Image (cartoon, rainbow, N blue to C red; front, top):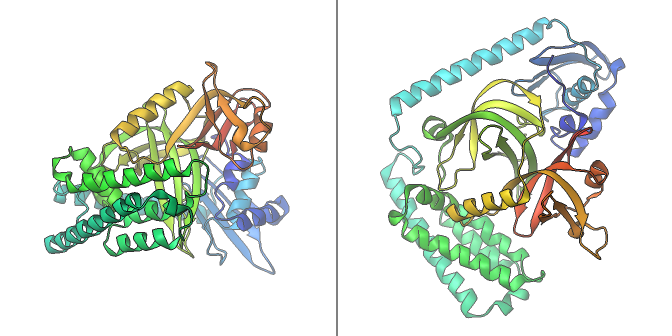
Length: 447
């Protein structure tokens, strides 16, 4: 039997805080019957209200979830409760129930059919047009190119106006100044730039804001000029520019024509962010053999669930297909082999991380975040500072340090106890946001 997940890893799958809380109420052995597990699955039957009995199962190789309850949340509280029991050792190995074997067989059959369809599609289409993302209708693609060029020309004028009129006006400007500019970009089908432009509204009135705002304006203008001269750029950088502007590459083209890398991928962190009505989940991975970082994105609208197949603190044997670009980072899981297993990732020193980030930034100057996995770091406070998040640093054995940005540092402080940990998080210009940590005796803690 493979090593079981921790309680933190199970609760990290919950679609929301309410589901995580409700899972505790059903994670009681007395509520369950017919439970069992093997290397690939966990299953059981939970007594619901009245005479209702809900069958819950988990395919550990994805993972994927099944429950006969009417909840639209995936995974539901019954699946989470079952996994909590399994993580605690309250579910014992046993032969699969008939309904579990049937469900898993159907999943394997569907996966095989999908793989055959992808292979056939790749054989028919070859590499022609891979990574283009412009659509199959040349006239439609041409119209969009013109609209984007007009939208970027208007953005260029707007950026020059902001600088020409002076940055002082931004301190008292209403959010509408940036919202209107972002909306015009969406109308011009350059939606990739709308989010960064809208986000500029949060910069004024923060410490050092004039320098930061001018830097963001400069990066936007650099992107506008790069798009204008895109035909002169190397292929990878041209793809990066198009992606930043908002041209997308279909997933089937990424899987069939993108760079593919096979490795044991450690899932080092996950973070959900909501903007308007769309929730985005960023999952960071690091290759055990290659040391290569990867980012897997998933999105959900209201009433739908995010992808929960990659669990922080586990390692998956998989082949990733990377989206094209000068610094390939975003990827899709093209193929997986076997179930995910709990594992601590390998990491780097602070200096090695900074060198890695500098090289990535040289290839893609618009990178706004980069994954860090630091080995053997201790938490330290700025000399003379109080014990607040802004005063905390991750310091390695060489004495190099990175500032930490987190609202609640107490769990991380309790885990480390002054000793070394492996720390993973997202690096942004203002510091490192921790996402997970590994301790020699405590295992994985999701922050």
